[in-house]
Length: 118
Length: 112
Image (cartoon, rainbow over all chains, first blue to last red; front, side, top):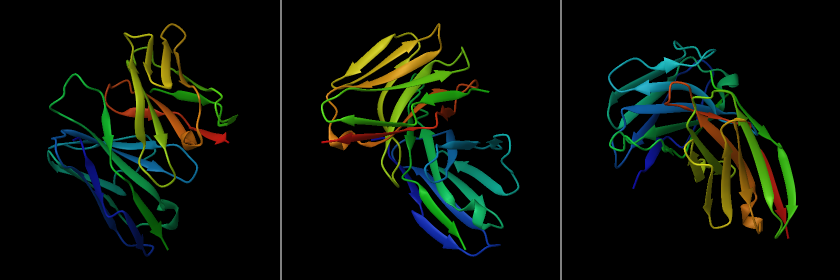
């Protein structure tokens, strides 16, 4: 149980184009999902908290107009990198908490999406 | 917001030795502290976690200790094996009580 999937697992796009990454909770509902970015040999940096049915909360320094987040259902959050540039190349990982387990703080991570912008 | 410091950044041990990784956090209201193991290109894998109402937790060769007063927590791996080689991250729940804030990671190398 508690599986989170991400699609695509890797993507290569040209500079200036947009890329959408999907994060799905497969066997539980998640009112809250999280998006992290991880550069090579670095830690996971929280980008934003995605809330079902409302606007995402972005961390300081993360451009909300560049990283569009939509959490339209209890099992799906999407991250769209708009006008991608080579410096956006990174490993993007989502995580989710099980809304049905209110006493648990555990987060379940997706397998990540490797984005390369050429 | 929450800030998590992790040391050391790299750790090399011989197979069978123990390994200890330490983290400190800034927000005294944080109440959940997980540890993750991440292999290259893969998702973080939860190996153990501890809540603020507990001082120590153990699971086979892995243990975590928490000192709330000093705001630090540690991961202890005993009888290390080559397959323990990976990057380990500590984390703490943010002030808002939702998102996890990660330490910078420790690359553990276990040589046989």
